[in-house]
Image 1 (cartoon, helix red, strand yellow):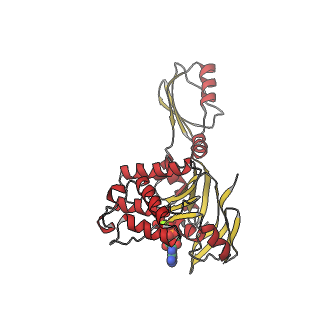
Image 2 (spheres, helix red, strand yellow; image 1 turned 90 degrees about the vertical axis):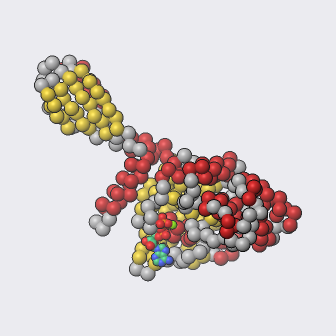
Image 3 (cartoon, rainbow, N blue to C red; image 1 turned 30 degrees about the horizontal axis):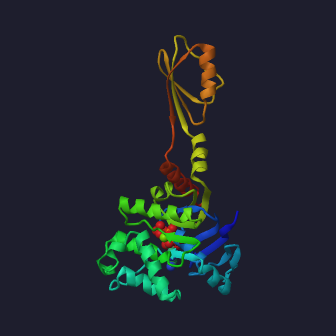
Length: 316
Ligand SMILES: Nc1ncnc2c1ncn2[C@@H]1O[C@H](COP(=O)(O)OP(=O)(O)OP(=O)(O)O)[C@@H](O)[C@H]1O
Ligand SMILES: [Mg+2]
């Protein structure tokens, strides 16, 4: 598997504030990687480091297999080469309000040295991709927030990048805008491109990403496929079982929590999957299962739990 981005033990301090505390991260070719974390976790700091826009104090960064940063220094030559293969949409980007979308892309294309005919063709393609062709001649200052976001995405795509890095791209978009954005990301994946985008909103990455990295307080808490993250936590799901019996059931030697709720009813609460053991008991002692509930945590819960666990552990 080809690694598009690899970060090892990245350390970034802003004065006395440690924003990245030995961050490790791997993005493989063709992945749509969701970089999730609460506000202030270090997402933008990670992205800015990857692009050589700030100076981390320590660690390593590889882009497309080439080492562009090590131990506090960028290899500027390599970085410039690799950046030609990257498209970037910053968190706080500015557009020229007095230009039109078409002019905006044309000027950007010029700066990339793309010849005029090709530039116009490319601009048209991109504006169609992001659904802005209809407003190609309207002043950017008159565009809606969502339209501006999409123009920023078109900008990031101007050099047909192998790796697209987006910092909170869906902020301020309405549900339709988000759905359209996700479609564009899926199209990138279909074309064999790699996408890395940050968000503090799980729902933004949930459907579109195959891999998620969760950053909390400057460290990667988990990096896995959404399916694996879900099934890992499923194993820790909660079980609630209600038993009915004509004679008292003996629960000696069981680890789960049992509460006798009436003469003939028992309520069992267990953190682990104890369905099999309960089944044995029922079989041996002649009780009946009235109700069985598996509490499946939502991804949102899982995400919040990760963020909070880290909080509890903070400072210890
Ligand atoms: N230029 C800076 N000077 C000082 N501190 C900074 C600077 N930039 C970021 N920080 C701090 O570093 C930490 C990480 O910030 P960062 O912007 O990387 O977080 P983030 O995950 O992108 O958050 P958000 O979701 O709010 O965009 C925060 O505590 C932030 O206040
Ligand atoms: Mg940020």
